[in-house]
Each structure stands twice: as structure tokens, then as C-alpha cells.
Length: 268
Image 1 (tube, helix red, strand yellow):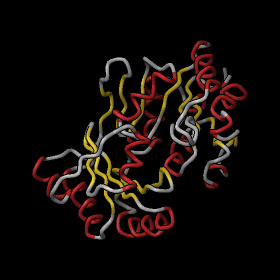
Image 2 (cartoon, rainbow, N blue to C red; image 1 turned 180 degrees about the horizontal axis):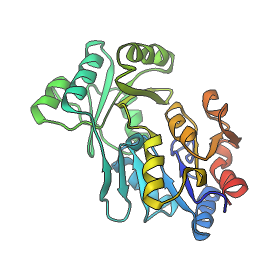
Image 3 (cartoon, rainbow, N blue to C red; image 1 turned 120 degrees about the vertical axis):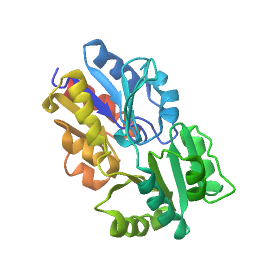
Image 4 (cartoon, helix red, strand yellow; image 1 turned 30 degrees about the vertical axis):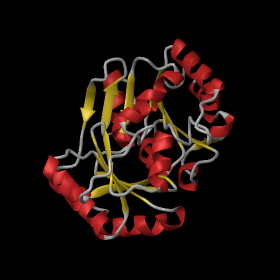
């Protein structure tokens, strides 16, 4: 076995456009684990969103990575082994900046998702992620202060044609302070500076005592770049963004079981 640990992004990598996971992917993950490999999902989703999908992958034990690496939990017990977040001051700074510019804002605090408005974009997000957003009657920043929320992640949701401008605006203001990335064409995410999927590579490598040369990772979006750069085995599905494909071995798309292909032809 070339890689003892295999990390995979979820949306756009393991999951097809219709939201389903192929039997071939499930079967190849099972074969990889049967031969002694450790497989982990590494996603930007919140734990409550990804946890409900793990059984479809046959994953009822081991670790799962959520919020871009800010949280890592034991699947069987739900115990958090890693749990990082913004400071209250940082969260307030970011959310106020987004609010003042009239953006559609999401705030993630533990198992809860808060949004500043209900519209078609929020409802589509809820359907994809299987979570229900809470829309307070007061501004999110005021609600955060009143409830002393511990915020793990914030994001701006916008139409694809506006994404580049929104991200550029955030980078101009916060590039040196926070990690700003895209996880889909609709989302611009803001995380504490060191909370990236590369942090998950470091944590799981130390946890399992596996050197990075024996860790593989696969993804499709810009938020996967830190993870791919940190891994020994670097893979991108065919539907990935070009920046990711330039630094990775390209395998078939998520529609064509790219994760299964990478495991069968490279990891094993």
C-alpha cells in the first residue's frame, strides 16, 4: 500500500451533482480500509451536516474533519478532538464587515447555522447540506453579542458572477488576518488564519503516526488547495478548479468515481 491515510473532500469530489454517492466509491473505500488503510472525509461542512452522510460511506468509526479542519471528531462517540474558532473580537469584525456591505451572511456556531436572510440561496443550501438555518429578527452581529456565540466559520453567499468581486473585497481587507477561500461557486468562506485543511493533514498524521509522504488527499475546490499541497499524494478530480489540477494528479470526475479510481490505481 503506497498511502496509509487517504483524505477526501466531500461535495464535488465524493458526491455527484445529484447529491448521491456511487456504489463504486463506497466499495473501493471499503476495500482500502479492509487492507489496512485509513480513510477520512475532510470537508468545509459543519459536523451535523457531514455526520448524517458518513454511514452511506460505511464509516461508523474513525475520524471526520469539518469546518475546513477547525473541528475533528470521533465518528463513533462524537467527541471533538480538535475544536478551534474565531475569538469573539475576530468574529464580530468579520460579520460586521459583511453586514455593512449588504451581503448574505452565514455564521456557524457549534451545531447551529445562522443566516441574516431567508431566500432561495439559503433554501438551496439547506437542501444540499441537510441543515436548517436560523434567521434572527435582529442583525447577526447583535445576536452574536447577545448570546456570546463561539463562531467557527463565517461566509458570504452570492451568485457565481459576483463571487470573484466579493472574495477580492474580503482579501483586500482581511488577507493577512484570516483564511479566505471558495468551497463552491456560490460561497466565499472566512476562517481563522491557520484553520485550513492542511491543519487536518498535520493533525491526522500525528494522531495516526503516519508521515505526510504516506498521506494522500483529493479535492475539487480552492479550499482543498492547502490539503493537497500538504499531502504526499496529491489528487484532483477532473471537475476541479484549474489551480488545483495544476499541482495534482488528475483522476476522473466526481461523476465518474474519481475517488475510487485514485484509491485503486494509486493508493493501493
